[in-house]
Image (cartoon, rainbow, N blue to C red; front, side):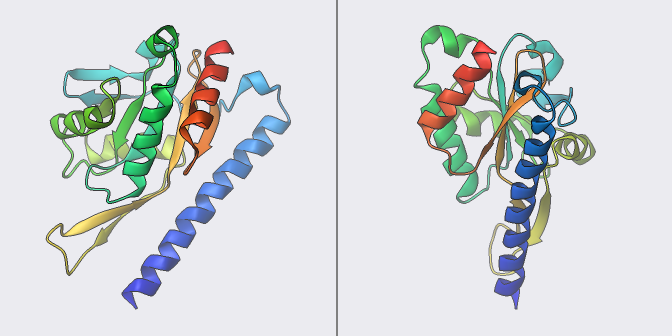
Length: 199
């Protein structure tokens, strides 16, 4: 019964992720491509292990954003590894104009110090962010990110977090330009980041 519920929830997460992509595509089809998706995302401020970080302060840079959590057993590891590998394909100049962010949807366990240490394992340039559950939830809702706390009766972890898996590429003007779906290869990620830098 439990496995059936988890399979159903994962199916729902996948369907929502696909739905976001289709919604974004429909938004873009009626507007010039360079406009991106202004109705998705938006400014926010969350805490890093070095202090508050505001998206507004990163204007002029391309900002890939990923939502996950440090106890994630596979999806986050895959996504962060691909983001890291994609960043390594950029030139030094390109990399200086990109600021990746990782936002934890598990602030109960992920304080800024833990998130910062976690993301630097994948790439030193990624900034890890956390905050109160209310603050994180508000940011997630702006991006149509869905997540749910799932109790684990047979694990010392106590619970896990099921969540959608999309990289939101914010352009230099603060508007989301592209949605990168789970499983995109590093080369594809690097290509999208370069396109955003040139936009």
